[in-house]
Length: 209
Length: 109
Image (tube, rainbow over all chains, first blue to last red; front, side, top):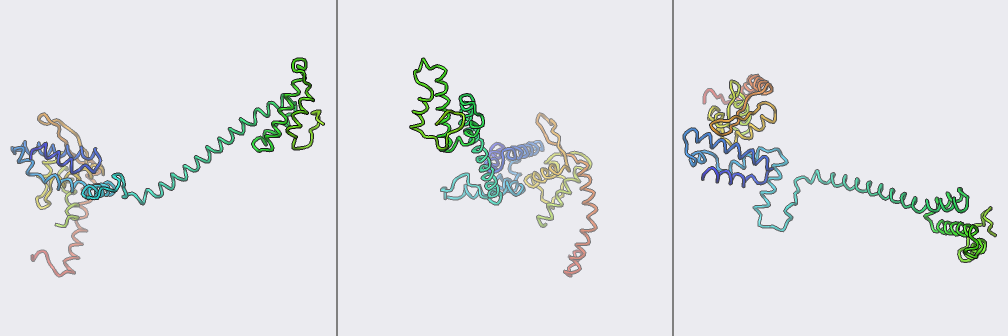
């Protein structure tokens, strides 16, 4: 076995540990072979004076900290097994750590989801409520009513009230251009009110019977 | 020798070998007592462990057209070496205890 073959075999045996560890080990053994050759040994003799790549790799792995060693051991067991049905990335060595981690991630995800849902609800409320406030304020001149409408804008009852006030505003606007439309605002509003009755009593100041 | 004991002695011997002057892997192996059966596979993790502990430091220098790593002792390594030597009396006490209670005297074997 020459130097290149020795280092390749060592790399293969160490494939279960991180790449930087493999590179460090390769460099160390490469220098050791070079030092032996400098002492007058041939390349083959220098390689033969070392432990076999398998023994060297086993000793290097056995000296690693617990976690990488456990991972390496598991990987070695997997590759030596004939049963290939298990997923290649199923690493159970960290199960004691991964369970709390998964619980933590799940809780965090739920919190983030709830916050996002809250933001969306607020945005939708504003989108629905703002036009009602504007129409109510401009068209009817009743800001307090409009604000009330905005507050109930999401419910079915609130939507009906919004429609009702919007219609009232539109009909009032007809007063400004009566000759163009040929329909008075009161008549317009009576037509709409007949189809969509106001859920509550008539409001003061709106001219509604 | 018991591997656990050997491991502790190897670390101390590596530190001692670097006390006077810096050295490199193969040279360290040749200077360590043969009873410890030090090989590259044993030395490599020991050097890494001592380096991580800050007890030795490494520098890379060119030697005959190639790079070679030279290890040298740090103040932390000096302190560990002093500590190890100071433990000699404690180790002797332990041996005395074992000999006394086992009825075996190493001097007679």
